[in-house]
Image (cartoon, rainbow, N blue to C red; front, side):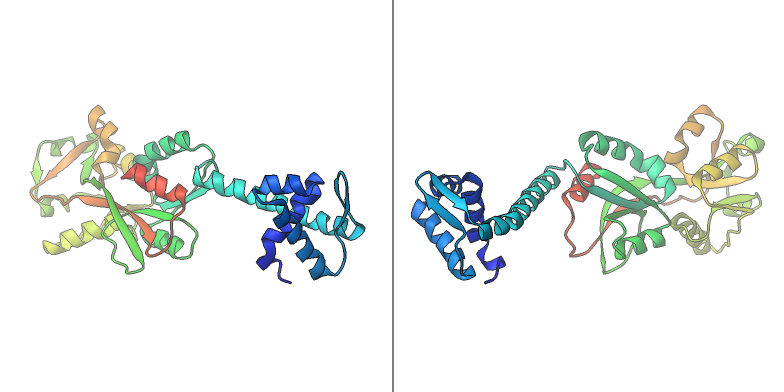
Length: 294
């Protein structure tokens, strides 16, 4: 006999043994007493021995029934725990959310959303995986993260992209380059200055390189750094002109420790997107976060 095909029989046995009464088991399971008696009889016939002693006050387990009950009781406890866990996951009372993205997007863009999400769902554990766009895509395809937050464009048939936010990149400088404030520079004039760019494999670096090449120029940085914080700090210290996201330096621009270097060409905006695996189901925790960001 397959236990998987006879779960209802074991459930009847469990409640009859637990309550010591076939009528009480029937009441608990919303069955008739004859149905309960028939289920017990089926189990006894399949095993070839009695599971209960019947008496006027109810039923009592035989030695064989006691052994069976010790196993069935454990399974019922596990099933109950599983049901409670599934309910908790559905209600976002527990679970985890794994997000991939760059340090700068986590700090300057996602932090308010993460804070709100944590306040609304304190039972959900947050796991943040830092990396470049290519690394985030790899994390997603390997199942390390549930979703990635990256700069677009992303073209990959395995991925689904939801656009969420627009950012504007710009060149900024500190007090050492005060003479450039309020001037409009050509690309050629800008390239006469020391330029500070993000590392080569970043989406921002690729975009500005392609833009300059479209105008017939090659942008070669004096300094390359691996974080937005260093781009900002190096510009403040006067080590060169940094290419950063305007929204990430709003405080510095407002207080005057940095100013935006104006160019005679427009710098196109960039877009942030949420990546998920196409045709793969999302957890409730992931869906709730995407809905919050959108």
